[in-house]
Image (cartoon, rainbow, N blue to C red; front, side, top):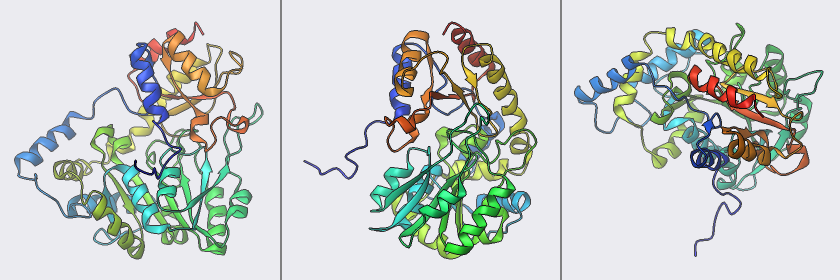
Amino acid sequence: MIRSKLPDVGTTIFTVMSRLAIEHKAINLGQGFPDFDPDPALCALVTKAMADGHNQYPYMPGVAPLREAIAAKTRELYGHAYDPETEITVTSGATEALMATVLAAVGSGDEVVVIEPCYDSYLPAIRLAGGTAVPVPLRAPTEADPYYRIDWQRVRDAITSKTRLLMLNFPHNPTGAVLEESDLDALESIVRDTGVLLVSDEVYEHIVFDGKPHASVARRPLLAEHAFVISSFGKTYHTTGWKIGYCCAPRQLSAELRKVHQFMVFTVPSPMQFALAEFMRDPRPYLDLPAFYQAKRDRLSQGLAKTRFRPLPSPGTFFLLADYSQISKQSEADFARDLTVNHGVTVIPVSAFYRQPDAPESNHRIVRFCFAKKDATLDAALERLTQV
C-alpha cells in the first residue's frame, strides 16, 4: 500500500460537477473553459509548424521566438524588460509553472501565505513541497459593498520569519477581484519591509473590464525583483487544452524554477510554441479580449438580474458570482448539486476554493458561473434559471 502524500485530496470539485452535469444533461457553466474554438488562423499555424518540421524536443525553457514574443509583450504592457534567454520559461500550462515554482522555492518547515478563496492547485503544491499554507481570507462581499477585498494588514500580520512565499492571483479566480494601484502600493510596502518572495498568478491578465488596465506586479520594479509572474495562453487564446503557460522571473529565481521544470516535463509541445510566437505578432487578439468577454459578462449578469439570483460585480476573469440566499439556505456545495440535478445548470460552489470548504466561514451562499461560453449556451442556461 502506498502512503499517500495527499491523504485529504480527492477528485477535484470541477471533475465532480462536470461528471454530474453529464449524468443529468445539465448546461455546464461550472468548469472554466470555453465551449468555442480558438481562432482558425492560430490552429493553421500549428499545422504549418508541424509541416515545417517542428516536431521534436524544443529547447528546455521554450523556443526562442516565443520567449522573445513574451518579453516584448510584457515590456510593452507593463514596462518591465525580462531577458528572454534567462528570465522567461515556457511551461506546461500555468498549473505546472505554479507547481514548479513552489517546489523550487519551498522546503520542509517553510510557510506560504495564500489568499482564500484560492485556486485548487495551490494547497497541494505547498504540501508536496513540505511547506505549510497560511490562509488569509478575502473580506467577503456585503449588501453595501458587493466586492471581495484584500486586507493587506492581515496579509502583513501572517508573514513570519518562516514565510517563504506569498501567493497572489489577480484577476482573481473565483471572485473576479482585481488589484488597484493602491493595492500595489500596499504590497510594495510589505515586500520592502519583509523581503518575501511573490508568486503572482496572472492567467487572466487580459480579461479586465470597464477600461481598467491590469495591475501586474511586473509594473513595479521592486515587486518584479521578488516575483515569479505566471500567465497562460489558454485563457488568452481560448486554448485551455493546449496547456501552454509561462513564468517570468529574475535570473536567479528562473534558474531554480528551471531546475524543477526540466525534471517535471522537460519542455512543452514544439508546434504550439512556434504557432503562438507567430500569432503574437498581432496584439489585437489580446487587446480586444476585454470587450469580447465584457459583452458576455453583461449578458449573463443582466439575465441573472431577472431571476432570484443576485449577481455580484465581476471586474475581471471570465467568472461571475451570484448570491442565491433568496432561493435557498443550503450550503454552497449542496445548492450547486441541487441546481445541476433538479434545474439542469451546473455551477461551482465558492466554498470549494477554501481549505475548509464545509466550515461556516467558507459558505456565503455564493456560487461561481463561467461565462466563457457561446451566447446560445448562456441564453439556454438563463432560461432554465428563471424557473429556480
